[in-house]
Image (tube, rainbow, N blue to C red; front, side, top):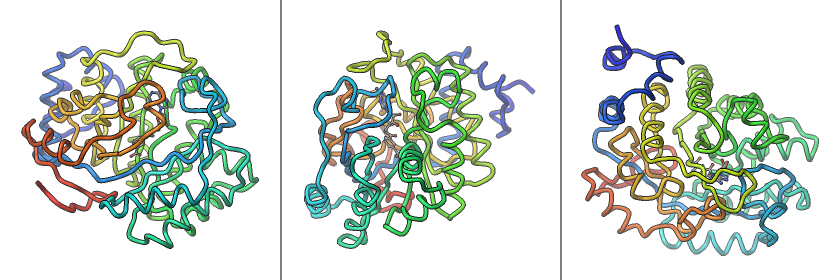
Length: 353
Ligand code: V47
């Protein structure tokens, strides 16, 4: 049986077979991924009405790809007060948001309570809002900074109202590439261990991959394989999110933007390899809205959400600072031949258009 026949028969492919898919014609891989997407989700494209809040950009770590951290190229430090954060939450709640996605830099000056109280205050005032917060990189930072184990930090997150974990901080798991792009931050194994512990408490999370910088195709496949292995054990990942590297304002000297061909191939291959992860997100913030719409035919069944405001990727050149309007978002999905389905953060359907 060759690789294509294996995929069509619903059989799992291995590392070498996955890597070899990159040699195939884009449209041929796309067709295979689209078949899997249709079997899992039909023509539905999920999104949610969400708001990203990035409460501080002061960072103890030094990732070369990051344009958001104030200690590197961005001299404009900020740390939001809880009152400022609650004003934002009040506003988005009044306009129908279902999820608040809270990710920060690794600020050593605030104290652990500052982080935890954000969640507690939001959950107390708005118990119906889903709080997706703290990447595994932040969990690792808080654990090191405040001398607590991962288990202790995770229990504190749950006690204070965090519902699910975002997929940030995974970057690329290959240790050599990881050392080059973000030395000193959470290691690959630690990232996976933290998510395993989170899943062990019956909680869901997402997983990202930062690509299009100095990594090679084999590193992306290795990344996917490590995710697939953990997912076999826990089943706790909802969604895989390949993040397209943004080139501006950072220290990772990569001038060339990855091609659309390579982005779509990577999305399609991830849909094929990650047979045990239910959803594949084309994160329009880093792929552009136009390519995210095309990616719907290359395996992607989720476009994240309206976002409203986002600071991490837009600092590196993404056109996402102000989100997209709900009516524009649903119209774009419909006009590209798919069914926009608003979902909650754990993929229960809220409303179809
Ligand atoms: O972890 C930083 C990435 C991530 C750059 O879980 C960059 O639903 C591209 O993880 N170019 C944060 N990417 C965003 C993130 C995320 C986004 C949307 C949804 C979810 C989810 C998670 O942004 C970081 C890092 O990998 N990032 N700098 C850059 N120059």
